Length: 347
Image (tube, one colour):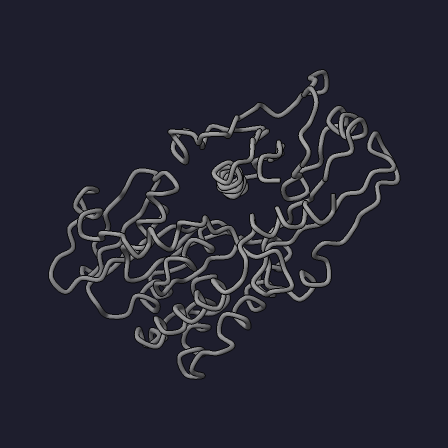
């Protein structure tokens, strides 16, 4: 079953997150023996995200109205409701592959209800076919998270000092290392409320965001955009990670270090409820005092409350919370394992 042909369709909305998830998915599938074509409307970010490509993954341009994809594989992934072009849907009608709508990651309760639901197609070129909703998630009733089979072994074998030296990163005595990958920095107070009073070397991959004036105890080092394995190792190296969006949230989870998540902002404010849904799961087993401090820190970082005067979470308690969260999720099958299992069952 792992040797099936998979066609993954992805449209880049903004911030490269959709492409980041789809590339990890395609590379993981290929590493397990699948043949994968990744159809994307803007592949430019792959030049730094995956400069070496991946064996078994072929990148194709998003089909235009007059383009013919040729025969499709046994599995078609429509990532994040990207809406397959009519010509592709017509090809689906010819071969009736397993058609999966891979949805966005969320901790909200509807995910468990919606995971693996069937969606009969009543109109258009694919009329009469069925599409299946597949939801990543944080509980056994969801599709799990992307996690390559060798990832945790690589994490355990990682040489932090050697990797930092190779990047030209040198912390001063007593400095903590923190990575910063964010949409924006809401305020210096929000940042310091998470960093605490410790001297800090702040490592920023990619273009520097607009930064407020920070105290002399915070040094900033700009890094180039990192390929995905390098970004993972940056998170492994740091004492605290500020991450954004879906892909880096998952990678911060596997890093097992204290982290702060900046959720993708939505104009209607729906992201606040999404953040609270995640925090409710993430902090379910945490010490109440530590949990309250983490929630306050995260809410300040997302601009929902003022960060001024907030005490940073106790670092040992925060570390224990993140370690327990990772172990809980490691006990669940990863996303690609579950996808392959689902395809086998549905076929």
